[in-house]
Length: 194
Image (cartoon, rainbow, N blue to C red; front, top):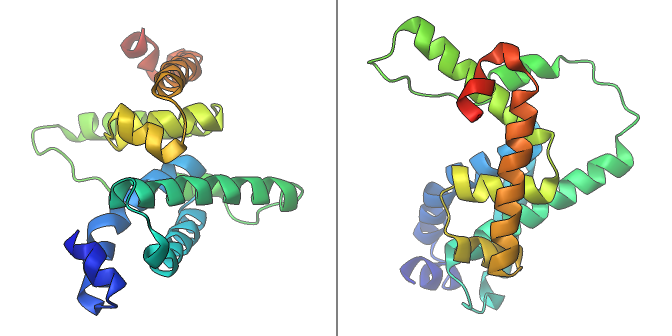
């Protein structure tokens, strides 16, 4: 409520606090939905522009966090649709695999050996890649629940669907993700997901 009052009052510290609190979680979610760092950065900028421009009309029927996540999910889907329509015939001159491999920086658990850290990083990369191959509606629900740790109720508000639909999408998304991962038995994830 304090941040919202500050935003509506044009107080610069409120904008800074909003960015500090929500930029990384929103970026993480958008990145997982789009699978590209540059696209995720662009979408996150657009999300916060929309938040700043729309804060006066925010009706507070949901929490500020839920409203921001709804904008982020919509922007990510809009970007994906735009990209599919306009860029599907373009050929990249850079190696996307290199970009994806360094997708997110993780702080390693000091208790893990270098081998275990590498294996964990590889598994995380495989999971992120598999996420990009499942139905976007299921992908969004899984990312919001299992990675962003949002409640079913918050997800229903963000996606503007019923609670039953959220649960169904999460279940179907997890199953699709499991299928994607078990199709690659050489990764060692087949046993973990079974």
